[in-house]
Length: 350
Ligand code: NAP
Image 1 (cartoon, rainbow, N blue to C red):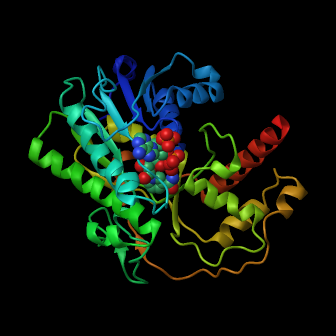
Image 2 (cartoon, helix red, strand yellow; image 1 turned 180 degrees about the vertical axis):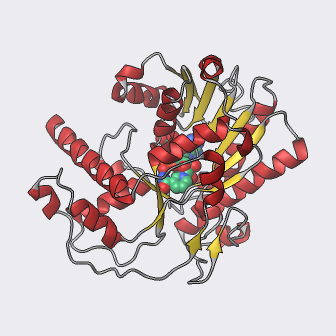
């Protein structure tokens, strides 16, 4: 059962990484679902200011906590004060191999432990939702073919040692998510805090970006993946990770996971659709809301064939949290429309 609206109004939600792609959408989702106030963590005041410039109408509804280094002891102690529900969204999402242990693995793993430790020390905290990833379940480098159905119970096989030796930034990122989530569940088992944990495992997330964007070269990784289609000479050969969901649905799931009894102690694989770049390109190119010039930028030669691949089962999240996924076409068209709008806005500023 979800908290009543009256109670929600009195509750304070914390969203870490509130200035990021999913973090921004999650802030909106809490406010749209009856939370009167949200606190967001960012790494600098400048990032909070940029967020408020983009979302002027929400000024006063979000207060900011600056967490420069989430691996520092008590990093979130101030941020969790008086908070009842936490969405821990912040984590490095990049495929850089430069000092991967300090830049990717440790912030992901130690970051969630700091958040849980600080939440355990704050008696107001009732629920923590951790944004994990479908990459903790299905590793891009270990994807088997037809015949396997992945569920919330699966874990991909990467080891920490393999991640340290890997020359693939994707492998390291995926391992960072796996070991962060495992560390979180271990914390819950060993420390038995008063709050309940829920983990969400989204696949590739698309949908209109709500974060501050100064340049289309600085988009978050998954939206950049879609925007890359626009200027490609031909569609990329194959989708590396052919499963996706809408950012608005994943953000909504953070709220439902934080406010639904059934979600306590659960891990949820959150796959809305299986897709190909060919389908993505076709959905955007046939969008009547775009101009001919915009449509002409999407390559039309379908070089990617539908490939038989693994199956996924997200029935637990659909059942427990009652989510109805947005159609794939709506997700990718809304993303492209917003990106074309941002492109025009940025050009207008030059
Ligand atoms: P994003 O836009 O890059 O946001 C990442 C957020 O985490 C930003 O607020 C970023 O802050 C913060 N962050 C990164 N490294 C940090 C560090 N070392 N210390 C403190 N904060 C740090 O990426 P996103 O796509 O929204 O991803 C958000 C979460 O969703 C991540 O946990 C990611 O693993 C998960 N996820 C995303 C997808 C997807 O397709 N987008 C799919 C599955 C799971 P700065 O702005 O200061 O860098």
